Length: 154
Image (cartoon, rainbow, N blue to C red; front, side, top):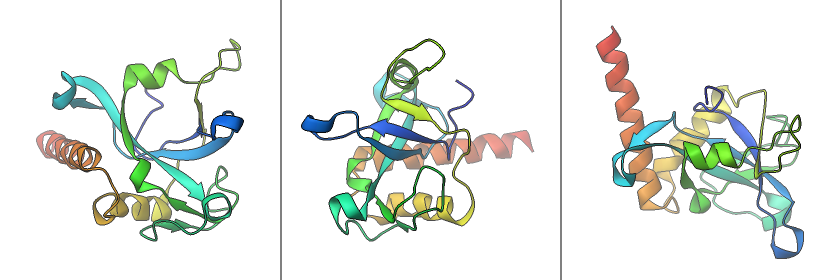
């Protein structure tokens, strides 16, 4: 799945029980990485984004203004408390494919999150006290692995 990269943004079905098809943006915060704590399968970390309108002011670690990305039309905040690690197989299974009428939890954006907003999202992963420890550990190992691979290639 070459289109799942660090910075890829998706809409994720994550509404409440009475509105399961409500979509929220989520950002993939790592490249696919072999997760040794999960039998070495390729996995990615993803963090959801909540609107201040629907959940009120939340984690102040990373706030995003409406319009900073096409999938984020309203003032929002990164919900680090709900960050999680997904295997690539789980992500692939849950991608909505309109050409085959396949429903799924993810709709992948053609436009990745970029620049200063994305850097704020990344910085908040380790800064927020609400990020689950397994996600923080996975994120740090994945970032370290990418850096080590870059150094080897130079």
